[in-house]
Length: 132
Length: 132
DNA sequence: CTTTCTGCAAATCTTTTGCAGCTCT
DNA sequence: AGAGCTGCAAAAGATTTGCAGAAAG
Image (cartoon, rainbow over all chains, first blue to last red; front, side):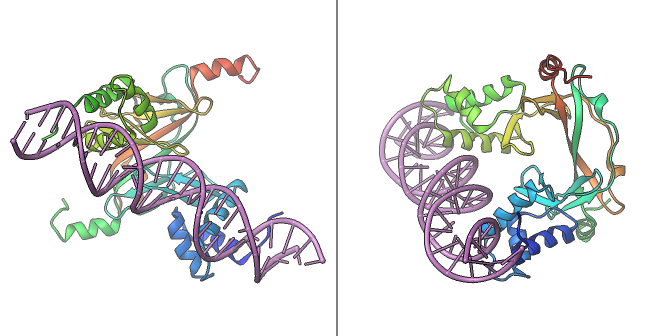
């Protein structure tokens, strides 16, 4: 049976509170807040454990390493800012995409990632005359 | 200026002929067909070079390593078979997805991956009574 | 002939594993 | 008290970089 340790609790809370996918280094940083001496190996071990328990899920964004987020109750997607690389959750979905696949293919799921500028980066860009 | 070497040509041709995304090891294998003594470092170096030249593009599928494919002339997406893990191109697009992002976000691009069963795996599944 | 590219291997970076001691149940 | 969990560091896998020689221009 899984034990409830300070480390595991810290990691799990961190991911659940985050509201957006976190990378292993980010998890380590955040977890140190609650458990100063925590090591990277423990983070990876708990990620794997939490993953198998279905409490968190992996999110792979092109060009970046894997990130993890709490398993959400409803289907959602992601938005990655091209300016600051941060990833945000998008609680909207284009709907049924089965029609996009060629005949003969059976679509059972999909994953969508939007790219662009987050509000912060748009504001920063306006100051440099990059906005329209 | 970029030189036209046997290795670079082999790698580029391989990716262009492939018709689907290839992983670095697959590229090495295929390139050895034309240039027996080619090394992995050369493959990675050329991938990077081709990437910067805009001749190929990276395709990151969750749970798998990065793959590369020739830059296509028109926007397209991918379909990954959950049965055989193969990746296919999907020449269709749900259209403008800008409306999905929350207010304040500016969508500049998107990437979509469909998951399901390819024709081959569907046929295989029917033989076992899994279809319906 | 000069410069860039190549292949090999060490270096980096990321993720996993081994071991001894501590913590949870 | 017993077993799992933790931290440190080496190991393992993937990608990058250095160097001397070869090929391209």
